[in-house]
Length: 140
Image (tube, rainbow, N blue to C red; front, side, top):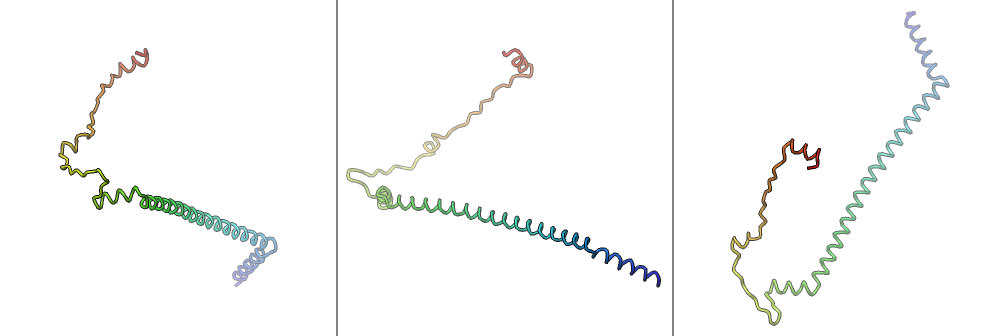
C-alpha cells in the first residue's frame, strides 16, 4: 500500500512540475511553432499546386490561341480566289480558256524509283597504332 501511495505522489509531483508556469509556456511555445510550421508548409504546397495548374492553363490557352489563328488563316485561304479556282479545277474539271487537259498513263516502277537516293558506304582504312603514333609525334 505504501508503494502505491509513493507511486501516486511521484506521479502527482511530475504532473505538477510539467504544468508549472515555465513548462506550460515552453510546451505552448513548441506547439505554436509546430502549428505555424505546419501551416506555412501547407500554404507553400497549396501555392505550388496552384502555380502548376495556372501554368498548365496558360500553356493550354497559348495552344488554343495558336489553333484559332491557324484556323483563321485557313478560313482566309479557303475564301481566297486562288483556292476557289483550284477547287473548281480539281472537283469540277474546270479549265481556263486556251488550256487543254492531258491524261498521262501511270508511272512505271522504273520511273517511280528513278530518283531514289542510293547509299554508298565508304570504308576508310584506319591507320595502325604505330602509324597513328608517328603521325602524332612527327606530324606526318
